[in-house]
Length: 280
Image (cartoon, rainbow, N blue to C red):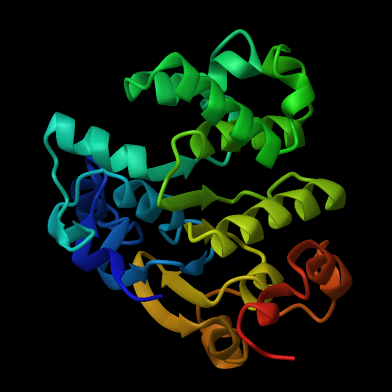
């Protein structure tokens, strides 16, 4: 990792009416994201952890310009994020966001048409669009389903279909919002294989999750949010070994492994994160 790709400097964001409601009801937070500072380098594999309502999804939407911060600065590749219409179009062609619910991203009549939408909007030639679609479908293991409507797919396949649409844009930074939620173990393994391969190819990934095993074994670094604030940011092993921090932020180290398990994670990632960290 040799260059800064994305950076937040003292960024805050409140949803419309948030400040007014928090004034009336002190138990409610005024800001969904409150004075957050962190950066993502090229080649990063970063997990975002936090209890429900901690601001994980809001943070991802700030990363690709879907939300505009109320204060602070967000930079992309060393320059302030351009919030003009054309500027945001360029940013979103390089910063892909996969929503938690794949049905929020699947619209077209066939899988091929759906995956082609992004590249077509980039003004690419038909031959380039076809090449990108075929490559994205191959990466996600969906090539044989190109002519089928996405609504007939299982939940796991629809998640991969939505991911294929993002990958066809050839993003430099991939934002994944709870990508393993609702997936069976086999689908989780397949998704982890895709994520690991992308990082190995130089794509940076920022993934929000409740799964501590994914953060510990897949992500190099972990961001922990607590009620919209940055509670900690650093190497995943260091974050996951801090029981006091996890307890204070509403995260619990589970005695038993998640549905991934040590063996599943190792199989999906080639001995997991440690293989990319140079450890035995």
